[in-house]
Length: 389
Image 1 (cartoon, rainbow, N blue to C red):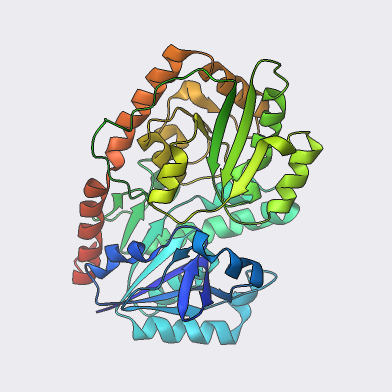
Image 2 (spheres, rainbow, N blue to C red):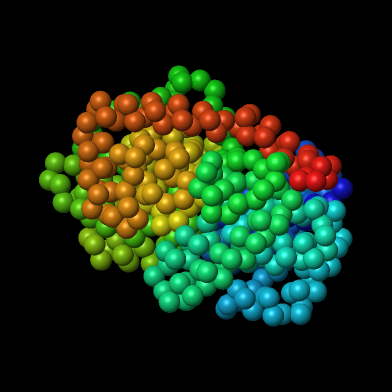
């Protein structure tokens, strides 16, 4: 049985292999291949540039047997795709040639494919990994505010009419984008394996220089500018210094320039690593993790950090409040309170150790073995067609 999986993610092709700069390593497809014999991925597809080729070892290989990739690149306005006969013809054909459809949303490609799947009366499942309303309204632009209600309405309609929905949150997305089906589940994107407390439990160690970590695509959504402003305040201290280590891809120069503007260029590093063990190893070098996002689903990076017993501070966006205690939450954009909470946690051993322990315990809810079983049942029901009948 063939599955069509659709999302806006950017994959890259080089030397007969497909790559992803973030997430979606070859292991990701296993969750679907346990149920379906063949996966057709419809997404944005590009060639690597020379700089990417030089850093190819830092990216994830996405290629896997029985997984094929198809491109649906769009430029300028995403809605140009809606009006393009060429795009719509391709979507119509691919939907017709596959037995089941999964759209990962928010995504423009997901909306177009979802709408076509409903037209063709195909079994459609949605993986709702974020909130498009929150995403577009958080943008500091008239365009974002204009598109927000349009994307929101269309997403809500697709989710409502889908046969079943996988939500990454426990409540937040379910309340805003309801689906009345009985086979819906909540399951995070994260895929961690917690073995033993030994060797993982991090305890407070007083230092002269602390390392703050953040994982996220280098975009306005992730609040990296907020992190840099907080770093500026922190490094006014005469007794301690703070380094901000960011794991992500995108426009590095934009944030290096911002760091230079705030006088913290010597205290920031931005790099990328393939998913899995390299990321966990990097997390173990940190003293605290932050998620100053302006919009979120349920951030994978935050859960991974919690699984390494790291204290964390995050915004009240998306499902972040479902993960960490209220006293470690800040309002979106509040860099002053972000700097205050970082300093408070890193100057109080008791507070640090309690937060580290609680985060580790919370992360156990997202252990890979538990989520794997939930996802398997979800996809199995999609295959069988025993959905909301």
